[in-house]
Amino acid sequence: MAAMTYESLVEAVRERFKDVDVSSVPGVLAYQFNIEGKVEGIFYVEIKDGQLHVEPYEYYDRNAILTMNGTNLLKLINGKLDPVVAFTTGKLKVDGDMDKALELIKFLKK
Image 1 (cartoon, rainbow, N blue to C red):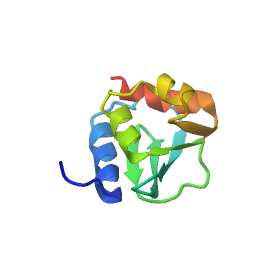
Image 2: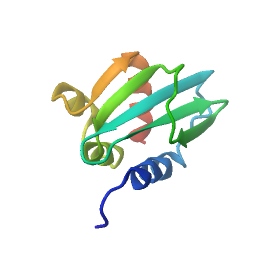
Image 3: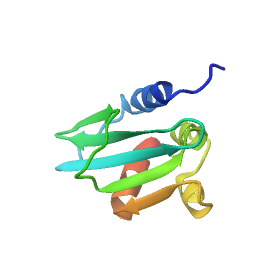
Image 4: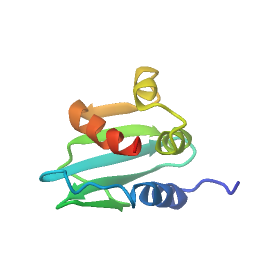
Protein backbone atom coordinates (compact mmCIF):
# COMPACT_ATOMS: atom_id res chain seq x y z
CA MET A 1 0.00 0.00 0.00
CA ALA A 2 1.29 3.43 -0.90
CA ALA A 3 2.25 5.71 1.94
CA MET A 4 -0.61 7.84 3.11
CA THR A 5 -0.35 11.53 2.36
CA TYR A 6 -2.60 14.42 3.18
CA GLU A 7 -3.62 14.59 -0.49
CA SER A 8 -4.46 10.88 -0.67
CA LEU A 9 -6.50 11.19 2.52
CA VAL A 10 -8.59 14.08 1.19
CA GLU A 11 -9.02 12.17 -2.07
CA ALA A 12 -10.19 9.07 -0.20
CA VAL A 13 -12.77 11.10 1.70
CA ARG A 14 -13.93 12.80 -1.50
CA GLU A 15 -14.20 9.43 -3.20
CA ARG A 16 -16.14 7.94 -0.29
CA PHE A 17 -18.67 10.76 -0.22
CA LYS A 18 -19.10 11.29 -3.96
CA ASP A 19 -22.11 9.01 -4.33
CA VAL A 20 -23.77 9.91 -1.04
CA ASP A 21 -27.26 11.30 -1.47
CA VAL A 22 -27.50 14.50 0.57
CA SER A 23 -30.44 15.95 -1.35
CA SER A 24 -32.65 15.72 1.75
CA VAL A 25 -30.36 17.92 3.87
CA PRO A 26 -31.82 21.38 4.38
CA GLY A 27 -29.55 24.42 4.51
CA VAL A 28 -25.84 24.10 5.05
CA LEU A 29 -23.87 21.66 7.15
CA ALA A 30 -20.13 22.16 7.42
CA TYR A 31 -17.46 20.13 9.14
CA GLN A 32 -13.79 20.75 9.53
CA PHE A 33 -11.54 17.73 9.90
CA ASN A 34 -8.25 18.21 11.72
CA ILE A 35 -5.92 15.35 10.90
CA GLU A 36 -3.19 14.63 13.41
CA GLY A 37 -0.28 12.22 13.55
CA LYS A 38 2.10 11.24 10.77
CA VAL A 39 -0.12 12.88 8.20
CA GLU A 40 -1.30 16.31 9.26
CA GLY A 41 -3.71 18.70 7.67
CA ILE A 42 -7.10 20.27 7.66
CA PHE A 43 -9.94 19.85 5.22
CA TYR A 44 -13.66 20.40 5.25
CA VAL A 45 -16.80 18.63 4.21
CA GLU A 46 -19.70 20.89 3.31
CA ILE A 47 -23.24 19.91 2.46
CA LYS A 48 -25.03 22.75 0.71
CA ASP A 49 -28.05 22.87 -1.59
CA GLY A 50 -28.12 19.07 -1.79
CA GLN A 51 -24.46 18.83 -2.83
CA LEU A 52 -21.48 17.60 -0.88
CA HIS A 53 -18.05 19.17 -1.25
CA VAL A 54 -14.73 18.06 0.21
CA GLU A 55 -12.06 20.75 0.04
CA PRO A 56 -8.54 21.05 1.49
CA TYR A 57 -9.16 24.24 3.47
CA GLU A 58 -10.23 25.45 6.87
CA TYR A 59 -13.90 26.27 7.30
CA TYR A 60 -14.66 29.00 9.78
CA ASP A 61 -18.43 28.96 9.97
CA ARG A 62 -18.63 25.27 10.75
CA ASN A 63 -21.02 23.13 12.77
CA ALA A 64 -18.30 20.93 14.21
CA ILE A 65 -14.61 20.10 14.14
CA LEU A 66 -13.68 16.43 14.02
CA THR A 67 -10.14 15.60 15.06
CA MET A 68 -8.48 12.23 14.49
CA ASN A 69 -5.44 10.64 12.90
CA GLY A 70 -5.33 9.63 9.26
CA THR A 71 -5.32 5.90 9.84
CA ASN A 72 -8.45 6.07 11.97
CA LEU A 73 -10.12 8.41 9.50
CA LEU A 74 -9.59 5.88 6.72
CA LYS A 75 -10.96 3.11 8.93
CA LEU A 76 -13.95 5.29 9.78
CA ILE A 77 -14.87 6.13 6.18
CA ASN A 78 -14.35 2.52 5.11
CA GLY A 79 -16.64 1.16 7.78
CA LYS A 80 -13.87 -0.58 9.74
CA LEU A 81 -14.17 1.73 12.73
CA ASP A 82 -17.53 2.44 14.30
CA PRO A 83 -17.96 6.21 14.85
CA VAL A 84 -19.45 5.77 18.31
CA VAL A 85 -16.62 3.45 19.34
CA ALA A 86 -14.10 5.88 17.86
CA PHE A 87 -15.60 8.67 19.91
CA THR A 88 -15.93 6.76 23.17
CA THR A 89 -12.36 5.45 22.93
CA GLY A 90 -10.96 8.90 22.20
CA LYS A 91 -9.89 8.14 18.62
CA LEU A 92 -12.31 10.77 17.38
CA LYS A 93 -12.74 14.13 19.07
CA VAL A 94 -15.73 16.29 18.26
CA ASP A 95 -15.73 19.97 18.99
CA GLY A 96 -19.01 21.74 18.36
CA ASP A 97 -22.46 20.43 17.53
CA MET A 98 -22.49 16.73 18.36
CA ASP A 99 -25.87 16.11 16.72
CA LYS A 100 -24.67 17.64 13.46
CA ALA A 101 -21.48 15.58 13.60
CA LEU A 102 -23.57 12.43 13.99
CA GLU A 103 -25.62 13.49 10.99
CA LEU A 104 -22.50 13.48 8.81
CA ILE A 105 -21.43 10.12 10.19
CA LYS A 106 -24.86 8.72 9.38
CA PHE A 107 -24.08 9.22 5.69
CA LEU A 108 -20.99 7.05 6.04
CA LYS A 109 -23.12 4.11 7.07
CA LYS A 110 -24.98 4.06 3.77
